[in-house]
Image 1 (cartoon, rainbow, N blue to C red):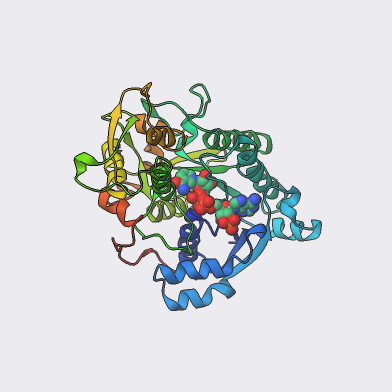
Image 2: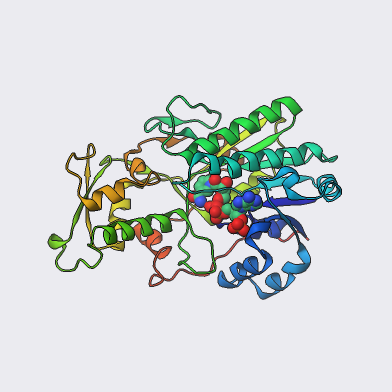
Amino acid sequence: MNIALTGATGFLGLRLLRCLLERHGSLTLLTHSASGEALGRIRRFFEVTGAPERLTAELPTRLRVVPTDLSRPRMGLPPARYGELADVLDAIFHSAGSINLEGDLASLRRVNVEGTRAVLELAAAGSRRPVVHHVSTAFVAGARREGVVYEDELDDTHGFENAYERSKYEAETLVHAWSRTHRRPVVVLRPSILVTNLPPHPELPRHPLQVMDQLVGDALRAAGLADARGARADLPVARLPGRRYGHLNMMPVEDAARAMVRLADREPSGRVDTYHVVHEHDVPVAAVTELMERLAPLRTRLVEKRPDDVSALEASMDFYPGITPYLSHLRRYDDTRVRTALGVPRSVTRVDVDYLLSGLRPTHPAPPQTVPGEARH
Ligand SMILES: NC(=O)c1ccc[n+]([C@@H]2O[C@H](COP(=O)([O-])OP(=O)(O)OC[C@H]3O[C@@H](n4cnc5c(N)ncnc54)[C@H](OP(=O)(O)O)[C@@H]3O)[C@@H](O)[C@H]2O)c1
């Protein structure tokens, strides 16, 4: 079975790669040519996460690296190379994408929509009719803040909180259209917010909560409050629009990757099979604001709507479309399909403030990462 993976150097892609190597002898990686040498970054991830030395040493022989650019025709490959690549594949895991929550729609579309189109075209060209496993996001549900989102729902009636969500929604609609036109199966994997307790490392990809951490620090600096000290009562207060009983789903990235690879064992229905790859329990919004307070010298207060007299600190924090809207989220994701396929629970990891803090501050060391599974090669 010849499997290709896009986005293998990314936060999720590295974990997918690790899990796929537990099951398959070799893999083809469609890496991002503009970002330079991928194998070295992958090797560093294996070293930093304490992978067995033998596994790390085997990487150059088990991984076939094909530098590509998903936003270019034929992924930027010469026609003969492209045809040869298409014809050897049995499955494509598409994890490449831009998760820039403040990016503009045009550049997000280039990677997320056109990149998905490029993967679908490669799958259409392949004589072995490879199955596409498309990594989407639970946030294609957009600006719908309440209720239950079902796995087969896909519509834009609620609008979107940011251009990232819209671009991922558009990519999913493309997948549906392609599946109908070509009468081909596609597996759509919708993880929620992916998190880790692995401390930040300069050689590893950043994750969304690191972006939040940076935003809060930047906002404090912009307001001249970065050095605020003293008793809690003396710290600056940020009033943030949000719901007191709001909650967000956060899925440990290692558990998400493992679930995705297990879902790939299932025989696809022939149409689009969509799975919510989410955690059993949501994280309260109150835990997210507590996390902010433990990361930076500030106090937070959730308020019903944006105050008219916003302070410089509040204005900087409110600017970011990737955080503030989510403090008002109360929706849940139905994951009946995943439960039926994999049983419960999908993740036994407890995601709380301490867990999240470990993934943001090196002073909270996490245990070595492990990926249980059978080596089948
Ligand atoms: N992170 C989350 O919380 C989250 C949640 C739900 C869904 N998702 C989805 O999961 C997928 C992976 O996200 P991630 O967190 O792993 O993102 P990431 O860390 O930013 O990784 C993105 C990957 O895409 C590659 N890439 C970017 N532009 C490319 C291009 N033009 N051609 C080829 N490759 C390109 C990057 O390669 P280089 O790094 O080498 O440039 C990198 O390997 C995305 O589809 C995202 O929408 C993520």
